[in-house]
Structure formats: C-alpha cells, structure tokens
Amino acid sequence: MDSKQFREFAKAAVDYIADYIDSVEDRPVLSGVSPNYLSELIPDEPPQTGEAWQEVLQDVDRIIMPGLTHWMSPHFHAYYPTACSFPAIVGELMSAGFGCVGLSWVASPAYTELEVVMMNWLGKLLNLPEEFLNCSEGPGGGVIQGSASEVTFVALLTAKEKKVADIRSVHPEISEAEIKGKLVAYSSNQSNSSVEKAGLLGSMTMRLLPVDDKGQLRGGTLLEAIRKDKEQGLIPCYVVANLGTTPTCAFDKLEELGPICRDEEIWLHVDAAYAGTAFICPEYRHLMKGIDYADSFNFNPHKWMLVNFDCSALWMRNAKHLVEAFNVERIYLKDQHKGLAPEYRHWQIALGRRFRALKLWFVLRIYGVEGIQKHVRGQIALAKFFEDLVRADPRFEVCTSNMGLVCFKLKGDESPTIKLLEEVQKRKNIFVNTGHFQGRHVIRFAICSRLTERRHVEFAWNEFCSVANILEGRKMETMDKPMPTIEIANMSCQKIREKSK
Ligand SMILES: *Cc1c(COP(=O)(O)O)cnc(C)c1O
Figure 1 (cartoon, helix red, strand yellow):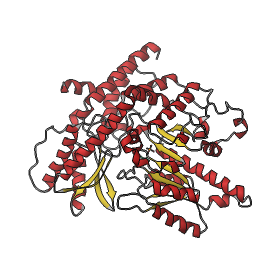
Figure 2 (cartoon, helix red, strand yellow):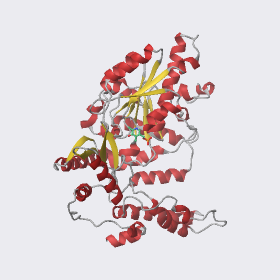
Figure 3 (tube, helix red, strand yellow):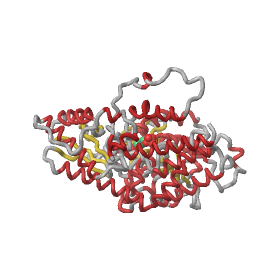
Figure 4 (cartoon, protein in one colour):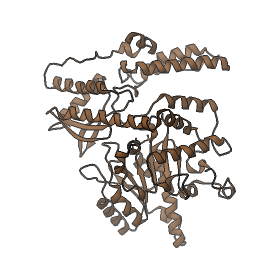
C-alpha cells in the first residue's frame, strides 16, 4: 500500500467511523451473535496474496460489526462509561501515524515532554495538591499508564520496595525475603477486582475490609485490621482507598484513612478511576477531602473524560520511590538530563510507550475545560433524572445514586429484581448489568455514552416499566421506539444512516 492508497483507505475508514457513530443509536446495543460466530465467516488461513482495501473494509461491515457490543450507543448503561470522542480518535490515528516508541526522552522528545505538560494541565484541572505535579519544586510527578489496574499494581510494587528499604535502613540484619513475606495490603470489599489482582500479582496479602451502610471504608475498620495484623507480627504496607467504587460509586472516608496511613507509615493509594473526572468541576472536590494524605492518585480519562481507551493518569507525591523500585539501570541515571525530563520507562512495567498524551492534548484543547465540565454535569443531571423517575414509581426503590450511576431494585424480596433484569437483558433494547449492595442484587444503571440524552433515559425507564408490567401480568405499554431487529444488526452503517434520514 502506498501513501495514495492510504489516503483513500483512511478517508473511507473515517467516513465509516462517522457513519457508525451517527447511526449507532439505531442498532441493538447488544450483539445477536452466538459464541464462535466469527470462525464461520472467516478463512482458517491468511490470504497468500494481498487483497484490496475495499474488500477488507466491506468485511468489517460483514464480519466485525455484527459482533460488536455498542459502547457508544445511548442505550448502553452497563459497567462504567468508556470514553470516545472525535478529537481523541484523531489523536489515536496521528499517534499511529508517527509510529514512534517513546522508550526514552531521546527516542522521541515530544512524547515525553507533551506528557509532562499534559499531566500538569490535568493535575491543575483536578486541583490536586501541588506536590503531585511535575512542575512543582519537589520530587512529585505524573505519568500516563494503560489502565487503573496496572496503576494499582505499580503503586503496590512501589510501596513494597519502599517499605523494605525503610525497614532495612534501620534493621539491616532482617532479610528482604523475611520482610516481604510479612507485608499486608488493605482495601474495601467494594474495590475493583483489579485491586485483589494487584495483591495476587505482587504477592502481598490483600485484606478486603467491610464497609459501612453507604459502601464506604471507614477509619475504625482499617485501624482494627492493622492492629490485628501487627499483633501477628505482620507489616502493614499498602492501602487502596476508593473515590468512586465500581459497584455503587461510593467514596471511602479519605480524611479518616489518611491520618492512619500517615501514622502507621503505610502507602496510601487513591483509586478514582471513574469518579476522578468529576473533580474537574469544583462542586465535587469536597469528595476528595483527605487527598493531602495520599502517596499516589489515579483516575482514568479513558472512562469519563472523553479520551479514548487507553489513558490512565497516575500522580506520585514522590516519584523517586517509583523510579527506585522500577529502575534497572541505576548507574546511568545520574547523568540523564538531570531533572529536566523524566525517563518514563522507569515509571511503568513495559519499556515501550505509546503517545497517549496526544489524544489528551486534542481533547483538552478542542473541548476546553468548560466542554468537559459540561459533559460531566450533563451526565450527572441525566442520572438524577433517572433517579427521579425511579423514585416516582412506588414499586421501585433507589439504593444508591452517585455521579452518573443509579442502583435500584424492586421493593421487597430480591427475586423479582433478578427476574426483571434477566428479561431486560434478553430483550437487548438497553444494556444494563447487576450489582450488589448490602448483600442484595441491584440493577446498576450508568449514564455511559456521550450520545445519551433525556429521551434515551426515558426510553430506558420505559423499558424497565414495560418489563415490570409484563412480569406483573399487565399489558405491555407501547414504547415510543420500535424494537431494533437483527436485520438492522447486520446492516451496513451507511444503509442505516440512509434509512434513518
Ligand atoms: C473501572 C475501574 C477500575 C479498572 O480500570 P481499568 O483502567 O480498566 O483497569 C479500577 N478501579 C475502579 C474503582 C474502577 O471503577
């Protein structure tokens, strides 16, 4: 393929993406395919000779499209959002076009330097403590990683190495292995599964502590767990506090956990994967209270901040600890552009790095701070609207409502809620999933797509009500939108667009 063909192919692909996003609302949000559908549509071997891009693009429509779950659909209300915006898509495209691997400053100076500036912009936008920023006097700094899971693991490894070094500086007679065998980490039982995984991968006992009736981890609970472990001769090392848990978007009591971690010399990591974006709006910053105690802070612009996956922002109060834990070439470090630009490969697991700062830059410039604030506030308002609809129906109860996430159920016994959810999932008009709150099944309804509007929230509510009516043996209420059919699922993007015009 030469550059002339590339222009044609890429332009056609951009048109395809634009058609896709313009028409995504009309597709069933969940795919209708069965497992292994793809192997029947695709040859077992790659082609011997090259094919025309036109054929390949057609096959995207024929083979890939039917097997997509449409995260961009305004009817997608499961998990948490994954961001997708046009500026970020272009950022991804250009980054691929440059084709660099930013494994050091010299390997592509713009990669490192734009990332430094973007992490400062972003840190200021969230009003993080000054010490976290690259531009501050001290050893703090920010870096872009691939995912919150990776970050939780990286912070755990850093905490571990720091704890070993601290103890051995006072007790050189105790071996590294002996210390490592006694380290313990803590988080709440509402934490993301990746927190438990970080403990597994990092060989550190991870205690998932009970929460209060609001889903928050409290200081007293942590203190008690630490006391018990110390009695056993174990060494508390790492705490992961949640600002916005995955099940219900609950906020741990950071101002209670923080002083305990400081007194006990425990690394405090704050996981704000989803909700962190809301701190761009000053009215939500009170939820960050206690952040001054944190050693590391993380949120995912790729969840709620309109930056396509992957882009997870991590700041360290003292990045030296991270570099000491991860650097395998300490001798050379001394004369590396001292203090000018970080060598980010020592801040992460992999050697190679993508140019993630580019899409962040595009999004921040093209939306502006106000554009992102508007997006966040708009989505929270939609969740509030949904909450009001639920509250107005005496059959239902709202269990929690935080940010863009509402958890609710049918009143009373939990089996009707499970049945309701199953039926809604079968119909595939909207996509929601289940969660647990206080040991009960709840329906998690999240505002995800940036395309979701009030009418989609009404549609979703209508869907719940219709199914509830059917289950109660009442007649199905008419819906204001015909159910999407499998025929549409298999239609090309262009056709759908023409049809809906
Ligand atoms: C989504 C989520 C994660 C996992 O994020 P990834 O970037 O996919 O690893 C971690 N913690 C919380 C609180 C989350 O909501």
